Length: 73
Image (tube, rainbow, N blue to C red; front, side, top):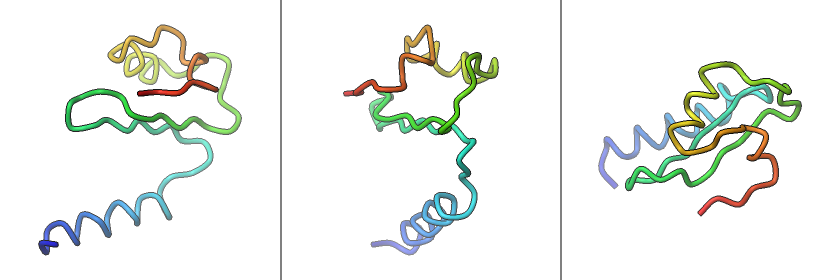
């Protein structure tokens, strides 16, 4: 593994362990640009923030509530 890859791996681990909280949203996008996974806050609000709605719209999701028990491929 290259030094850059090792530094990036540390950064990703760091973010997941220290920066992401139970109130955060996360979107995992593959190298092909397809949405692979989403994580939502445990207590996601009925109406999400406008920015979250915009991100969802990019991936063809019209209602973020659809994501609660969805399987993405």
